[in-house]
Structures are given as structure tokens and as C-alpha cells.
View 1: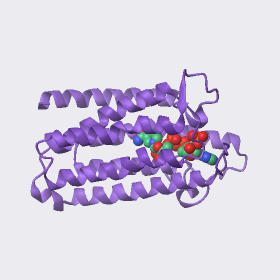
View 2: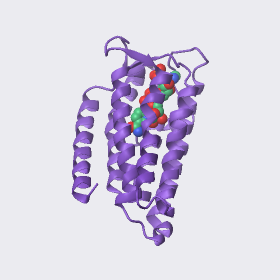
View 3: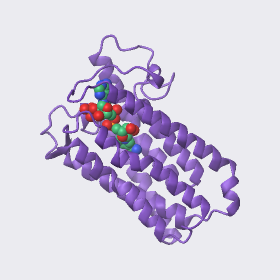
Length: 253
Ligand SMILES: NC(=O)c1ccc[n+]([C@@H]2O[C@H](COP(=O)([O-])OP(=O)(O)OC[C@H]3O[C@@H](n4cnc5c(N)ncnc54)[C@H](OP(=O)(O)O)[C@@H]3O)[C@@H](O)[C@H]2O)c1
């Protein structure tokens, strides 16, 4: 992909991100608690299968486009590949297996849209770090890379812990909702989304790549409004919901 094409693809990505923000602000994506009527959005898949199919293109397409890149053998791109897989292998192969309600209906349209996005985003980010960008050997010792890796790992830890707290709220076979407590739930309703956002901000910083930055912004477009919808849903459903909690950003929002 020459640089004109790459720039054009980045512009398309920015437009898709803006459209996503508009759409998610009007209506939360219909899965989980925001799918009250399972038949309302067409055919569905069991959540476990839906999550695997939806996420699989992210590690596959990143790895494939990475391996085709001219710089695939260099240290900094390889470190970035490792970060990508640290997040996406558990998300694709472990998270779905741990779901407490694995047969929850997930609309096929959500799975298809998520898989298409992951195909595009994984391919673009893999190609960016292994072909478009050229990291000098000194990049491995640069401050943004170290700060980015640290932020990525903090975000990953927050995301994993927050998802584990939610899992522990249900016994196998249970499908209802309870108020989560512990860790960053003291401050926000959706620390899993906050952790996800920090993860991709960290990746963008480490990679110093426009495609990485667009992915971090896209993550906010997708999960920011959803965090607000979750937050309002908790407040309406639980009269004793902790009033000091915010939706996504501690103390602010
Ligand atoms: N990068 C991205 O753009 C992106 C997009 C989407 C998701 N993700 C990540 O994927 C993961 C899952 O996302 P999600 O939207 O499904 O998160 P979620 O709405 O917080 O739900 C996570 C899991 O916990 C269950 N759960 C949530 N709140 C609960 C409560 N109060 N009591 C009992 N169980 C509860 C949900 O069950 P139900 O499904 O039955 O509600 C679901 O199985 C998160 O780590 C998220 O960051 C990333």
C-alpha cells in the first residue's frame, strides 16, 4: 500500500469512527443488557460462538499482514505484535470460554459488524507497524515506547480484573445482574471499558502510529457512549447504586 493509499484508508477510518460515535450515542449496540428482545435484530448466535467469530479476525489479520511486511523481522515491530497478541489471544480464545451465560443470544449483525471491523483494524495496524512505519534500532529505547508499553499493561490489568469481577457476580447458569464492587468499580461503572481504552492508548503511544491512534479513538467512540448507557441502566435498576460512581472516567464522567 503506497502512502497515498495509506492516507486514504486513515481518512476512511476517521469517518467510520465519527459515524460509530454518532450511532452509539443514539443507541447502544444491541447485545447483553441492551438486547431486551432477542428477536428484534434478526437471527442470533450463542454469545460464546459469537465472541470467538467476532474477535478471531483481529489476531489473524494483524499477524498475517505483519508477516507480509518488510520490517517483520525487526525488534520494535515484533514487540508491538507481542502486545497485540497479549490482548487478543485471551479475548478470542479464553474470554468466550469463561462466559457465565454462554448461550446468551447475540445478533448475527453485531457479530458480522464486529468481525468486519476487526478484520480491517487488525490488517491495517499489522501493516502499519511492519511495513508503513520504519522504526530505527534506537526506537526500542525511546520514552514513548516504554511509556506506551507501561500504559498498555496497566490497561490490560484493569480490563482483565474488571471482567473477572463481573464474571464472579454470576454462578454458572445465572443470567441476572448485580451491582459490582471492588477495584475501580469504587469509582466507575465500567472499568473494563476504561482498561480497554488505556490499553489502546498505550499501544498507540508505543507504536507511535496514526492507525494505532485511530484505533484508540475508535475504542472511545464505541465504548464511551456504551459506558454511559450501562451507568444509567444501573442507576435506574438499582435504587441503592453508589451515587459517587461515574460512568467511565473516575471523578469526571
Ligand atoms: N475494543 C472495543 O471496541 C470493544 C468493544 C466491545 C467490547 N470490548 C471488550 O470486551 C469485553 C466484554 O464487553 P461487553 O460489552 O460484553 O462488557 P459488559 O457489558 O461489561 O459485559 C461483560 C460480561 O459481564 C456480564 N455482566 C456485565 N455486568 C454484569 C452485572 N452487573 N452482573 C452480572 N453480570 C454482568 C455480561 O453479561 P451479559 O452479556 O448477559 O450482559 C457479560 O458476560 C470487555 O472487556 C470490553 O472492554 C471491547
